Length: 135
Image (tube, rainbow, N blue to C red):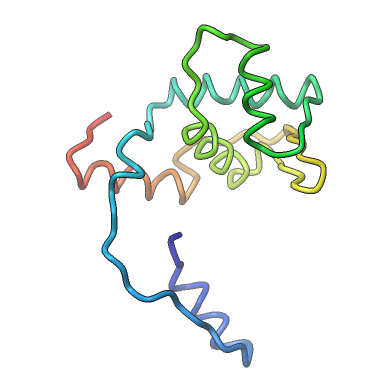
């Protein structure tokens, strides 16, 4: 996980919390290699997320919810759970979607936004560009 230094600084400034950071480890790009930042692909995943919300699909965990929904919407499209998770996290950060972890339910808000407004999406784009992945 990415630790935001601004957040850690604010915690240190405003609380007496003891903050434990994981030991520095070698960064592995391999997890991100197959994640796409293509806007059209994010649109495809948004339609899947929207389908889940509109049809009130739930399950006992996010992976099963994803598996259940992808069979219903378009079994021929090669949906990927990691890409789904990245897209969902981005849409949640943008305020476009909500995820209720207790009931394993996704909802869509009326908010409109652009992908570039997501710090997570921008960081992912920068990471991919730094590795020569120009999508």
